Length: 614
Image (tube, rainbow, N blue to C red; front, side, top):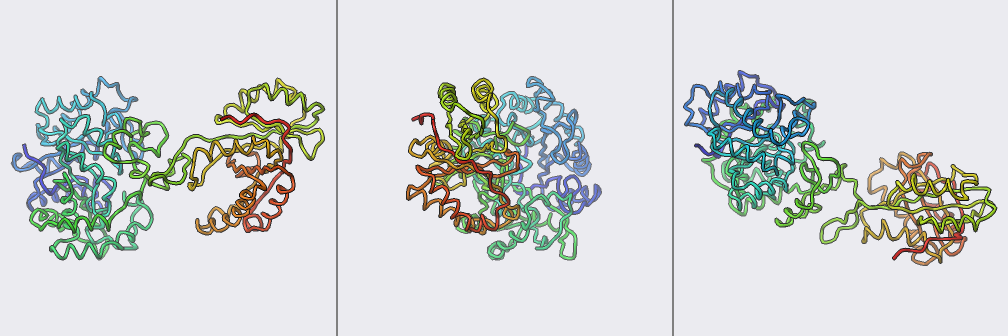
């Protein structure tokens, strides 16, 4: 058995099986493997999924003339390309996908995949076999890890490990995996480099505690630390690095000068500096950067990258102070959406993302990881929770909100009959007398569950005195409470304040209206939008603090027949302040310059309100 060495060669290098840089071709890649061995590298990594087995075959040919005992062979299995169907850039499904097999078949699949990978390589055992890009089942399942343990018992591999991916994340899942199966895990492979210390660094203490050694990948940070990917470089669409955010190359170069100074002090190339920083981190004992051939006059020969990598073990280590300074300079915390278990993902579990369960949340907190602080991306489009102001550095979040529906009717000759029916309905609601129609009434219904509008509330309308009235669909309004991220008490803002304002018997007068801003407003910078909205908000605050009026602000995107965006309710003990606040707001930039539509307006006075629940 040979442990992975400091420097490892990944068969995904060279752009042939994975689209990083130019494709050096199969012959070029085979020669590069031999060059790596001749240069002193003694750890070679493959995955059966690369090229659907072709990577195994190529690596096997490249190593075929070498003494098997002189190098460490690392394999990886996990993606089922035998029976699974490739899902475009998402690749092949994990073998634990319930569409492919039941749990009692996991062990048989692992044995079959491992045997076939070894057969293609021309060998009978791995030094290390990694579980490649597991889904949540792969991290947690005792059956999966019993299957892996059986492979070790049968001599198919000397050591076992786990390799999260392909994207970044999986922090809590990996720690949970250590806690569940640490007695079986010898190695783990994570993304880690001086420009991406987060989130990989969060799992290193757990790895050290469970005596799991770590292989760091993406050490080169997409080629930046090869020092030949320059600002302004254009990457082909199929290059995997094109999925990184716009401007990432330029942003990285802004941080390189202090790194260069440290590298120069120790006579490192930038790649060697990055490798040495990784190796200075807890539990990290091996590095496997992606070696890639760039194009253009500044491109470094990929063969030279191999030599740099091979020499890492001979180079000076960084000092503790330097390592800490690099971490500070390269800090990328909260810079990207993370895969794996996430509080920001509320959907069904799929191959590389799932919800943060209470059990995983407990695991995180045992390691002083607060997911909504430490594994959080403020612009994660998956995160549809409401958010309020942070408390102790952690944003308040909620999946609860109120829905309000206003329906207006005409032809009412007996308001009291409607009030009696509504008061006995069990609906949380308000009945308004319509100021503009002596036969008009409005029914405001409040609920956390919008299904009520098409069940209980609907049944009430069609089986009550309202069924005999004329509905005015142009005045029907529906909205939901929402947050802006600054609310001191999020739950009260979403659930309490709208109820208090709507059901306050001291504020019977109400004006309800929808609005839509011009589309140009949505492409203004956040600073410009904030300035415009603040002018508007200050009027509302003035009226509120003086006790003149209160408001209920609701979003109605996609809920309004006329494509309005917001629904506003203004409430007061008198009608005049409501008219005056609308007048004052007409003078703001938002209303004068950025409003596409406003209204129609419903003006009413409450004749009955549900009692406010304590």
